[in-house]
Image (cartoon, rainbow, N blue to C red; front, side):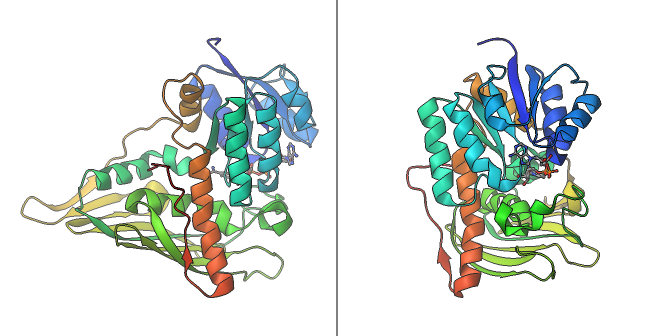
Amino acid sequence: MSDVLRVGIVGCGMIAKKNHLPGFAKAGGWKVTALCDVRPERMAEKAEEFGLAEVARFEKDTDLFASGLVDAVAICTPNDCHYPQTLAACAAGLHVLCEKPMAGSLDQCTRMIEAAKKAGVVLQINQSIRYNAAYQTIVRKVREGAIGDPFHVRCIRAGNGTPNKGWSPGADWFVQKKHEGGMLVDIGIHMADLLRMIMGPATKVAGLVDTRLPDIDVPDNISALYRYANGGTGVLELSWTLPGGAGFLEVYGTKGRIRMGFAGKDIQLWQDGPEGGESVLVPEPCPSSQVVFARAIRGEEPSWTPGEYGRRALALCLGALESSETGKWIDLPAFPGENLC
Ligand SMILES: NC(=O)c1ccc[n+]([C@@H]2O[C@H](COP(=O)([O-])OP(=O)(O)OC[C@H]3O[C@@H](n4cnc5c(N)ncnc54)[C@H](O)[C@@H]3O)[C@@H](O)[C@H]2O)c1
């Protein structure tokens, strides 16, 4: 394998700008050799901004996949594109770093995992919380036993607006069912996965899922209650309509608790006992998704977020939705044989 891995960016919107283009540049060992977007002006903007004027541009994804110009692709398109584009990229023998949510259904996730296995390529899902230093530090502390046995976790992530107004102005697909948008798979898929990292496997979920905004047809407010295999509980609250917004995480264990404010700031650890008390946790650096993707392709270590993780995170969200629709607790799939953390 060559020293430099060649990657194509499929979808040159906001996450390409904020995460993938800077991430591949910073990771080292990567060269962006192609851009793809159905909107040529998006490719032109990113080429200008990231010094990629000489790089090939494609308006059609399959033309890029067949070009021979890339070893891997980062799929940064609206949610409903992830499944067909991943299948096509795998069939072309390309490694895939696919944005979350991995797909719209667990069956689609399974087909993507199988397609990557069949092609012998790496499929990594950009569950980016798992590459975030603050969250990783909390998870590590809990696993080291800093708060004893964790038995309850609470998380709220709320804003007062939808991503098509704030994050990526005009990206209306975020609030459209036909493009598989909605708060549950936008932020919920990260936070439900985080709660599961802290508490271990979830066995069932009850959810209340609402759409409050008049002009959208996807969930914008979610309350979910999880039961974990360790006997513990988790509460997840998500909203796009909370005046002023809100964001915090609290983890309670038999010997202490950890609290974090919005956006990874102010992580406080309180420990019981004579040696205990309040202290501040300083996040330890962790590698980016693009660094880990390269290591997985080179066979140095397995991906931290393979397709199986993306599928499991989606199951945590779809369960909450099904519960809200049926009024019942939903048993979550166990995915036997997968020893995942
Ligand atoms: N991991 C994270 O934390 C995180 C954060 C934000 C967004 N995302 C995910 O990233 C993906 C993209 O989000 P975004 O904010 O960049 O959206 P965006 O609307 O800003 O960008 C999407 C781009 O894809 C292009 N596109 C649409 N259909 C295409 C196709 N068939 N082929 C090629 N290009 C196509 C659009 O023209 C647009 O430029 C979504 O799946 C979203 O959930 C992940």
